[in-house]
Image (cartoon, rainbow, N blue to C red):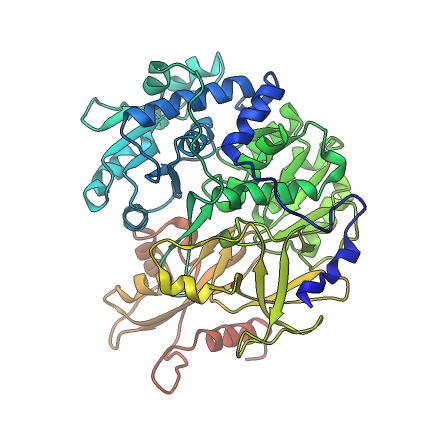
Length: 559
């Protein structure tokens, strides 16, 4: 069924049914766009506007700095930054010198960060100065030899830049001179902006973006220059009427995440558009940016839209300038959808994908039929098949649920240094997602469950075994099992079922406090339920699926 591409019937006029990406890397594309539209604004940051001419010049400067610091083709350069100009400058400079970006979440704890940096083999780290103490503390556990620090105010416009140290004293950290630590702005100022030889190659590795595994151990998805270029070309082909327009996309998705990496950073560059960077996506800040910069595309996740609907200014705004609203990470509650449509005439274009396929595989047809509860149809050049859960070899017809498998030019080449996991996930060119879903007769995909135990909260993936392991380390906890439960604000939240050691007592607050000191905030359980025993298999393995079913029955009043 997949190769028949029966979903083509749902494509709107102008969307190509046959698709082959143009073999142009993102590094090449930036040079093309900067030559064609030098004075177009590429990025807006807190009011500071950076044109494509300026942007390419900054990329060249930083590329020269990396070369002088000894970065060679194939070397890994780690990023530990929010959505500020330095991350888009650094990423493209890394492309240009033929090195590889390794993305990291600034919210990670020292334990999480040390594992990921070590696994990536990164030798250079570009980080926020506020995070330097954390980076120095774990440096010896990694291969990092050079650290480059950035400040959040480096690219603020006048007079905000002058006022920043006074109004945000808690966000400023003086970086003392020390061996192996450099300041981003010092490096940028040291080198000319003359062109640097582009060493990015279509089939070579461009990025390591980390995802989780069924075991809870994060894995680096190896994305080639072909992958990251193909996905933005596929996405661009979805909107034929925008081919020659100039759009402004609100950069809400974090660029260290595959969705932000593709849509926030690379999609605007491919099309010569603008991205308004959002370093901290809080409702008040988003409303201010909507008002000032009039972005034409608003991406979000349930958390973002729910928060915005609680903001009076957002509810009263005239958003007629917004052409498209995107949803992702988790289905939006029907009430949220209805409010957005009633207030702003908003139609949410849902997307579906994974880090392993550079974030995007399906999208709601632009200007086509919207089916609430679905995630749209496959992008041009993308094949999707639904296979049986037992063997993974028998393809299922529409309306039958099975494992979702994806094939296309955006699918990763494998997991970094993990051949066994790669062999399990990639079979004959198909990426086996671990997600369960089904097609309808028009080719619209519905995600009905997850084969993996992943929890998705506020757009972030949480692997319950990782949280289980932290709970198991508590001296008063005998057993624990974490699951995802519905949450109106976050989409899902973590709930922990805990069995206490005989003779001991624990409170929900004590368990939550213990977790807060050992993991990123969004992974911490928000609910704890104490239980006498957990369901187990014949060999003593805790049955997470049965725990989920038990919890669902309780919520529905059936237990």
